[in-house]
View 1 (cartoon, helix red, strand yellow):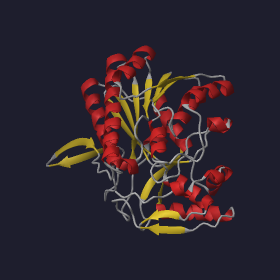
View 2: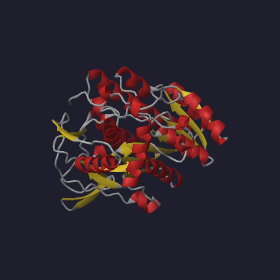
View 3: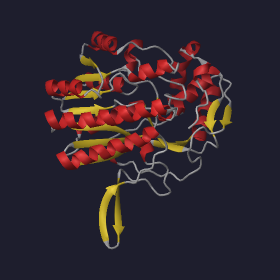
View 4: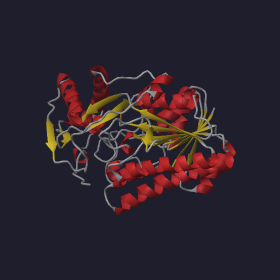
Length: 381
């Protein structure tokens, strides 16, 4: 298939591009290096340097013999984006091209403005480009489980059937985000749902939980194919951060009581879920929603697992409960449904001690590159 990946230089975008290229798809990627720039500006670059997108593509060609076509540019620039759609005519487009950090979106007005402008405009431009040039193209959008918040009822898979005054209807599940970033993801979903109803677009919305890990079949081929790996409080996901903190001898930063519970998945499962969505597309006029995670953990449970594995590897791991810098429930009910992707054939990679140990091995090789001042600065919401 002809597959276009928006945000193809990112933590998820680059591994996705290689995985689809390896399986014979014709892949093009777009990126404007926004995340790299924001990391430089905040002095929170990742654990190791990665080549720029053009060099990554060259290296992938040398190792695999397969091609990925890169485009350096901004998905918020509609003339730029529309030219690629008109020329390439993708059969599927994967939308990763958003400012991906909840903490960043809450830093200050400038960060909030950038998050809203980038995330909503890129989604708007995507919908218009598909409508104008490839109306049968399947849109796969990375949403987030954070859109739902932590309601005191079970979280259904995107939709909720309602009986009211003797009548029945079906609505998008009520969503109540805990950050501006997650609010923009709600607005993404609403934008696409509007254009699904209006233009009969075909959209799969993957409500993804926090991702951990840094190893996929393709990234393991060569060090220069590694994906980005942040461990700071702005762009680093919690489990990735905890492993780095354990290796660095920095107390694991548990916010508040540590009862915050979310659905997590290995980066390998992200690629598998996106591929399943690609191979079994939504129908025209359908907004299909999958809750994309495989296991739920509280922050305390993750800290306990990292402590156990880290100590077994010789690290003096400690845990520190910090005053929570976020406005969120620290103890809550959490029971989300996640059956759709399993029914399509997802075979999950569970968080075992062996998986954690493999993460430790990679981080330990780069232990000398950890900058402790990047780990925690106490940004408050």
